[in-house]
Length: 257
Image (cartoon, rainbow, N blue to C red):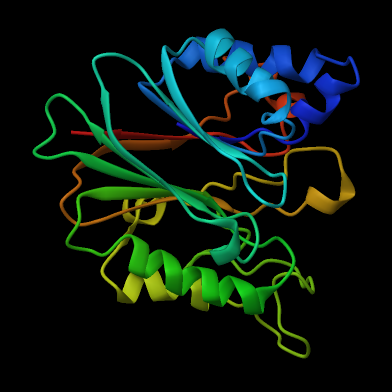
């Protein structure tokens, strides 16, 4: 499961834990074997106190934090008997914005260790996203056994055209720039949601005017060797009534065989 947690960490440092508690409830209800997050704001403070609290309250024995130079930290957590083989963190000097981590996990039943690459692409600049997309192509070549999970901040090829915004469109262009993700397609990676015919939006449910666009920004991309059994956007309010306030993004769920 991948989830953008919005600003719960910042709110926690101000003494407001409502959103945090809602996020804990959703994660504990679904209990994915592997949980990847972005927007772990302030999770690095006080010897990673909030990261460790999240790992414990979400219910994970193991986890790794990627401290982004932007403060928009990312993390991966996993359950036993999954085992960490390797963890690589993109140096801040190489990161164009939030950065990238790459965790390799030994998962029972998988033909070889699975590489999980997590990132959060630039929210403001389509030019920099093109650079980031090219790096992702190189960081997860199609011959590897792996998955990319990310808040792409850009529309995938084939998804409905979004309203004009200077953060997604080049000046004077009618259509949103999709090149950063087209690069992944041309490199042989697979857009999981599109491949199963589910292009449900992951953003646009929250009340803030800036995020009222219904778009699929939260995405998973796999290499061809990964067998996807199921994919869905977690968006059923009868199951998770907290979702509309817990974050401005919906979680995505991927099952692999």
